[in-house]
Amino acid sequence: MYTVKFIKLNEDARTPMRAHEDDAGFDLYSCEDYLLKAHAYGAVATGICIELPKGTEGQVRPRSGLAAKHGVTVLNAPGTIDAGYRGEVKCILINHGEEDFQITKGMRIAQLMVKPIFETEFVEAAGLESSDRGEGGFGSSGLK
Image (spheres, rainbow, N blue to C red):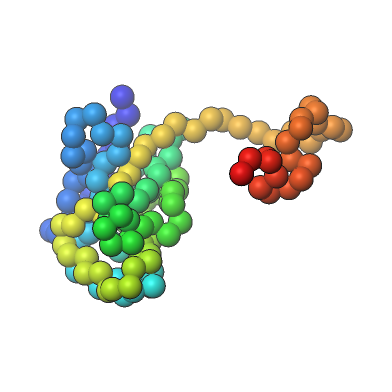
């Protein structure tokens, strides 16, 4: 089990929570009232800073209900929070809908996943193992 330390930056901040015990993501809540205009985007404050464990990353992902009902989603999904980042967690949301969307304090606006990362290095090579994928570029799998 991972432990994520956090601090609240203001009285309107809420602790990230799972709605159900077996949910994968932790709900992130707005700590501000924010009018997200139709076809616009903006960074919505959560009022928290987190300390992720080394070897992990935070992924800010959309909430399916906001996307399905209002066209509101995370613009850079998933947004990455590096383990060394200590600033305020903000959610970059975009409103694809035709109507302005009012975000209120305490509203669930995104979800946070804490995921392990693999220690990785890139090594230059003289060649790569042969594969039937990639020669045709993006979208070239042949599937329709």
